[in-house]
Image (cartoon, rainbow, N blue to C red):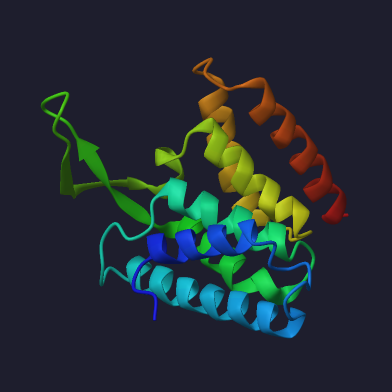
Amino acid sequence: QTYNCRDISRTLLSLQRLRVGTGIYNLDLEKSGVQRLGARFLEIVDTQSKGRTRGKCDPKTLTTVLRSGVLMFPRSDVAKSILDAASVLIRDDAIPVDVSDHEDVIFVDYGVNVQFLEQCNDYELSWILWTFAISRRFDKHVFIALTDQILENVSDDSFTASSASRVMWSTSVLLSLDE
């Protein structure tokens, strides 16, 4: 039993590195395992979004879960629960903000919340958008939320060329699916 998003993130990353999804072990068992992890991830995120838990999934963890799940099974329904969980976080979730008074100590203020995407950097935003494109899954509300946040982040001149390239490709793929 996995207990939090980080456990699922580490497990999926390990499975990806072991080349799960290629069928070298047993493709049916590989699919089943990743689907179960995805279902548990969605359950945790649903619980988080309903306010029963706090801070269980941060942008870095979501990015790892999405990348690993989608890279193992790019165009199948195996990663559907993972993408559903990402959609929940992107659409309507707020997370606690790190409030630092000292350079070496970080305080998390659970009374100050911001939208999930506002905590994402350009690398995370571009990979999240990429996973939806690789999966060929267009969700208008998720797409608008991601691209709006990307535009906001581009204005601070910290957006890297590789992130911009991922965003351009992903946007092209997703917009072609909307037709």
